[in-house]
Length: 530
Image 1 (cartoon, rainbow, N blue to C red):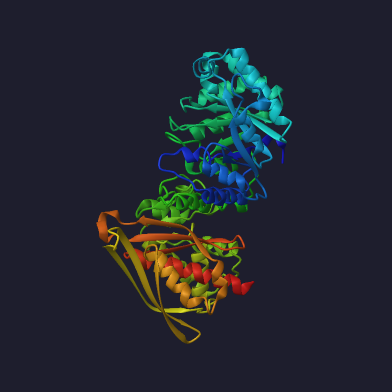
Image 2 (image 1 turned 180 degrees about the vertical axis):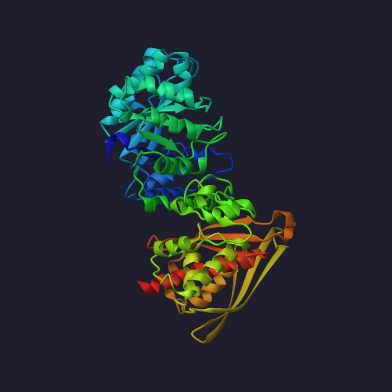
């Protein structure tokens, strides 16, 4: 691979994405997303800002182990009037358990004057001293030149001096930021071209916001002009109108240009899955019309388009959907999906004969269940169990005969208003029938407790299993209180294993039981395999 054509991908979902209105990552969410990015070959994963909030502190306190990506901590240059060695913010950044750091600093003289209240010369010293100090503690230091394009338009000499200060102090990457998203592609191309006369493109990055709906176009223009690092977020998350969408940028670079990334063709085929995994973690509906990965990205309604696509897909499809892990969808007669499902089998290590007629039956089952509201991109454990049941490779480990859940809201003897949940389950294990009753903190906890109470004597390995996340989504809001709900449950055990399951029903307790049943079954299946 020619170094001149290699473009490095930097994901800032866990920091920039967390600034999206309505998005609230937990530390576990951040770890799961970081691992998903690592698996597909992203070069840099920015975990957040150490010291900024308890979630980021928890994440960096026990960071995930990445195999392909470099974990990056984000911070800022030293404050005015402080030395780099004694600045608490810079200290928190350098104490994070990462091999690379990225720090932001001002490059617009207007902000230097108004926001920092220091001279232009002192700002240059802050940048250079911070980068030089970080270089003594880290293998790789990056500098985000905030509002670079606004600064360059106002005072090109000073904006360039800020970038040069970081570069000359040892920054591996100087990232040019279109912070307010107001620059257009032709301006990006011109300014980047002028910067590359002073700083090699192999040391330049681009960070674009999407306020004019040009973040992806601006990033591609910057790459064409010479930069070799691109920053962005999954699904374009970010404050205001979002950031450059890596889910669009990656296939555009790999399939539409001669530039190279760290992703293989196999990695690229996981892009749709990773995009939807993020939405499931955030408990929100994926954008059906998202480029490359949306459900409608390769959808064709009846008529001339369908006829043309069936003769030659290139007529209305700019790429083969399977290249990014998506599929063609003919609205009136869906004919695809088999290859993607077989690929998912390979992901989970479930080997099947592609010619087995049960596979075709399973494809139809999955399509129908996804139409009914099931989402398997964020519930891999449920998908594996569905596949094993359909192919015939899943033993019946226990059988629920019936369950009943009661909630009581009342005033206790001390005059306090309390709500109590009680669950009764009838279970058969190995031909033996058991009835158990348990109370809990809510109906799902009561049901979980009663079920485990019945199963633990037969399956003691369930003792270390715990529910770590529970999400509910209303799938048919127009139905009001009769709406169909989808429940996603994430479970974990002492081995560090984490798995997600899904249930769908008009009854939220029934949907919860379905997800809970899958969670327990998957745990027992994996324990048996070990």
